[in-house]
Length: 387
Length: 142
Image 1 (cartoon, rainbow over the protein chains, first blue to last red):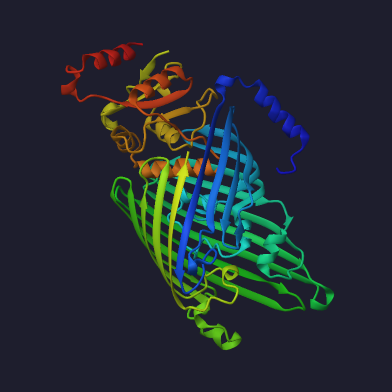
Image 2: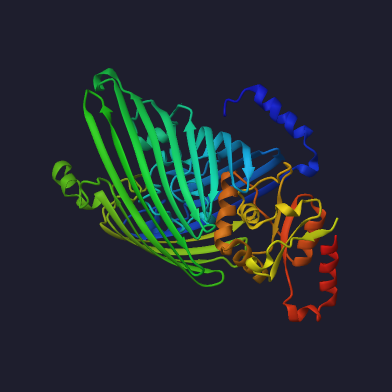
């Protein structure tokens, strides 16, 4: 755990000094990538309507295997993305993984410290371009528009995991539970400039997958839960008490030249928002992506991605009638065409064009005067190096 | 130390690529399930508790592609995704990429707990490559 006892650290240190060097395995890896974005209509990551370089990512990580099922790992990561992420280094994960059972039939273990949150196919490596299905993740499931995305990165807590091989299937389950914590200043800012002190309680993630035929087909189910408690001044009704549950269903098929990936996410929030007022929200969305590899080192893809701010108001009419907002601000239909070139193990170059109807995915912080163009286009290229 | 070629059910596996492992290992353990588990970074240690050290050729190497197809029943890009997930979530150690089969043999021979693979010449080529076939036979006799 983040607040691990000295005794635990001493035991770990004792394990390290008593492990012969020949029995230790280690790895050091990292990557850096830089994007350029150009859009027409609305901004995405900086002033992209005039061309933006305001999107880069880099990380360095290391793992040390101590034998006897013990692995120690950590990663430092920086990411700059418009106003929603500022390029300050963060400790992305730092964990001790103890594999209690390890055999060809299956494995089981526990990770303590700062662990990555598995959700859907890509959340736990969402800020590494080499692991994503595109430069910009499908926003229906991997929404990047606010600083609260940091809640999804990693948990300071514990993760119990296990997998079992049953014939041609490998079932994996992980359960992640985070210690309660207060939202950082930056996270609060993204909720609104005057957000009061907010605590996140009972943040947990459950993730179940089946890999068939060594990854030829993958299906997954994910659930996440968070409880937000915000202390309001008495005149605003005392306390906000809001519970979120999100669910993701994932499926992927991998053939030699073609991959088909589809995911659906449903998010529900229920709670008190002060003065005895109740609020219920339900948003959803999903995407389908077809990847085609015409030749070695080359990938192309076509994706349709759709996000709805209100699953009961898919065309935005209700929101327009009650709040006067533009209908198109309540959804985003994003058709994306992409191309990737990985000349060797180290380098990657990607490009993609998004044609978007609706502004639900336009980051509010990059569009301070509102995202006012209902039909917009976004082009982005990214170059990455890894080792 | 010499690399040991495993001989388990070669027919069912396809036979243009051979798994090689460090001599100190008990080769009875090396069936398809364990090889799959190792190269997709799920199995971390041998049954005696010592760490597994896997070596692979570059993704674009035809021998690697053949290895993926024959021994693992998958494609290099699917395997690469599994390694990346392990590396960038801190949950496993990815195989080390070596540049050539010569380097593969050398590293597997000299590294305790090591496992890798090499190409096997087609039967009609064996006589044409006496040095390689002699080397392989010599290793099997160990």
